[in-house]
Image (tube, each protein chain N blue to C red):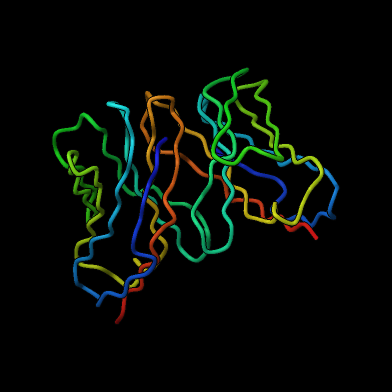
Length: 113
Length: 113
């Protein structure tokens, strides 16, 4: 069965530093996709970045990049030059070949001024 | 485009009552999903649909039912509400060919007492 694991329940990072949020996944599918979402305290879900299992290059979107290591089954999110507005919950998610999308438990990120 | 709309925004149910959470999208997305988010936790997939007339169970389907008679609508039915169903419910939609990301509704906060 598919599984997403986020081992960091909370992180504190100084403003302007880079931060890496960990995500490991488990699947027997060859074709799958990995997502990261941000959930601010207001509660909405904001899509950040996507990586397909066949994509050879790591995905990047502005200050976000996804460090995809297929053999290790990891899909860590890297946020460069963190800002106070980055404080939020971050969720890793995976889409399997049947288009079922499941989420990890999340990491709460606190950016310190 | 209104995107994904959910009604109601808030609801209090008594134990044993039933209700339907409404979800509508106007983006002609074929995939739709229902999740629940318990306080401080990640999202758990309840049911999903890859097109009108097709529904599949997710991780936590017990106590819920869905139907998908049109592309636009994906209602979630709670029968015999229990306190364990107290949660925030999110509906989401996506379309494979126009991009991998899911678009989320604003959520319905449900309390069962």
